[in-house]
Structure formats: C-alpha cells, structure tokens
Length: 514
Image (cartoon, rainbow, N blue to C red; front, top):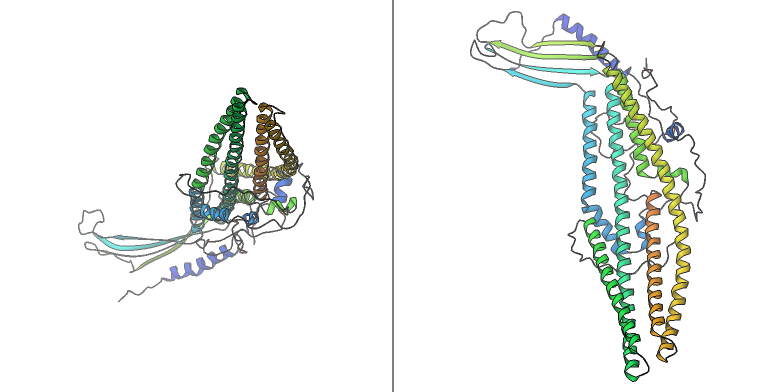
C-alpha cells in the first residue's frame, strides 16, 4: 500500500502562496516585443533606397509570377530530371539536415519554459559506505518563472532561425531546379553543336569529292583539293571538342540527379522555338516572394530576439522548487522526518556583478542584429539588381537572335551560290571554304544566343522568386503552440504592424504587462 502524503501547516501555507505566484508570474510576465519588418529594416539600413512602382527595364506584363515554371518549356524529360534532382540530390539532402538541426534547437530553447523533473535513488548496507547505510529516493523539480521573457525570447530566436532555415531550403530547391534546367539547355546546345558540325563536315566531304573530280579532269588544281581537305580536318577537330563538351554537360546533369556520371543520359537536341513573355510582378512584391530575402528577414528577427533574451538575462530570476523524498537507514532511527518528506520553496537570483559579462553579451547581440539588418538590405539590393540585369539581358538576346537569324539565312544562300559557281569554275575553293566557316560560325552563334535566351528565362524565374518548392505557410503565429516540441510545418505569420528596430543603443528593458 502506498504511503499517504501529509502536508504540515507550514507546507500547506507555502503551497497556497507559491501556486498563485507562479500562475501570476506567467500571466503577468514580460510582453515580448515584435521584431522589425522589411520597411523598418530598409529605412534603417538602406536609407537611399526608393523602390519604384515598375521595373526600370521594360516589362511585358505584371501579373502573378509563374508557379511550377518548368512546365512552360513543355519538356517532359526536363520535368523528370527535376523531380529526380529534388529527390536524390545530395547537396539538398545536406541542406535539409541542417534545417532539422535548427528544428531541434527550437525544442531545446523552449524546454526551459516547462518544469524540469529529476530523480535520485540511494542504497547502502555498510556503515562506512558512501551512503552511510541510507536508503531512499528523491524526486525534485525546478521551474523558472520567465517573468522578463528571457527564455521566451530565446525560444523565439530559435524559432525564427528554424523558419529562416526553411526558407533557405526553399531557395535551395529553386536554385537546384534552375541549375538542372540550365545544365539541360547547355547539354542541348552541345548536342546541337555536334549536329551542326556533322552537317558541315558532310558538306565539306562533298566539296572534297568535287575538288578531286575537277582536278582529275583537268578543270581544277591540287591547291583547291588540299584546301578542301584542310578545311574538313579543322571541322573534325572542332567536332571532337564539341563531343567532349557534350559528355561533360551530361555528366554534370547526372551528378545533379544523383546518378553515376557515365554520360549515358540521352539529351534531345531541340530547343524551344519560342519563349512566351512571363509575368514579372511588381518590384515591391519581390520582398515577400523571394525565399532568400524572407530568410534574411527571419535572420534579423532571430537576432532581435537574442537582444531581448540578453537584456532579460540582466534582470532577477525567480525559480520555484519542489521535492518529494523517502529515506530510511539500517543503523540510525531518523527522528521527526515524515515519510515521504515534501519540500516546496522559491528562490530569487539577481546578478550583482559579473565583470561586465551580461552587458557585453547584450552589446554583442545588438551588433549581430545590426549585421543581420545590413545583410538583409544587401540581399534586397542584389535581388533588384539581378532582376533588372536579367530583364535587360532578355531584351538584348531577343535583338541578337533576330540579327543572327538574318546572318544565317544570308550566309547559307551565299554559300549555295558559291558552290554552284565553283562547280562551273567561276570561283575558287578558298572562297567556298571561307563561306562554310562563316556559316558554321553564324549557326553556332545563333545556337548560343538561343541557348542563352532559355537560360536567361530560367534565371528570370529564379530571381523573380518563382514559387517552386516554397514551404507551405502555417497561419499560426511564430509564438503559437504551447508545446515547443510541436514545430513541424510551423511557418511565420505575416504582420503589417510597424515596429522600430531594436539595436545596441536601445537601453530600456522589454515592456512589462502589469
């Protein structure tokens, strides 16, 4: 039969006082301040930045940025490679593991919000033993009342870091998709280069035969024949280089999707005939769309909460303690000790002098916050630059493609006329071979521009923050669940509240709700 528990009048009195004090401490604790949002951060760091309503470069449409943009290329093989990369890419797996590390940090930081419970047991049979013949058990608990928000600020900082890691994963996924698509188009380019050179070599071989025939019948000469042979060998050398480039591009793709780099992937050579204009959204929307910028904003919030935690650490701490024990001895009769023995109490710990450690920690946290704010502003400026540069490049590539199409058509027509003239003896072989070189260069240049247009389109989707692989947003607030271990899927709550950034110069303690 379990022993009955009896509380002395003194213990019952303490219990009646401590329980309300604990509840009051939780309810009347420090109200946490909210971290600054992007307008306040930019107003503090990028004071000269004025975000325009439209992009500086011409834009075909505003609209919503495309979701799952790889579908716009209408290439099933590309979509399949992207899915394989998202499933098997080792760099992405490492990034996801780092995110899980951040998730565990939330649980560690939040565990201090709850009472800890510890147990101890003793047993001994010898008078001179370490336990002096005592036997028994002890269960104790300690609970810090987080009146000033030190623990809650720390938990929020860890939570913001976890959310930042989630956005980092989203950006890593988007970057991986863009890398696969870029590698795919580069492989297509190399494949088409081989086809162009193979066609040029075939045409050159026909010219060699014509030159040989004309030499044999006396209407030509050995110089034309040797010129044609030299030209064809130059094209063959270039073809070998192109085949090597193709295999290298294929191996890079195979590594991205987690396969052995055997250069066995069969890449179709066709590039998209046309690229439709894509909606770009408005410049200000970029701040809420690109996951790398959102990650930087959450990093600012994490450092903001570390400042609050460091400031609260300079204030007194209140701990509630409780213990239940049962003791007995083979050699001594324990007098005036109830079984079990129950003790309940509280203590107040206030830092008086620690050599400036606490102040230094707060100043260091404030410096980290200022650094994070500057990094956020840098990320924003770089994002705007990337979009404007990509839009400008898009327009340039369109113009280049138009010019090179004309060059290819004109050179191809000129070469056909020159070949006919050579057959009837009206021109020399050198002129014909030079036109062959010009045509192959024009075709390769046009192919390069078309490939760059596709890659530029991929880059534009990436820098605009195309919603591919973004985490699903949980509407629950960042401080939401009461249980700090329940963090799966937790995402930030969008807030329109305006707050002043808290930096090292802010010396006041967090506001206390009375």
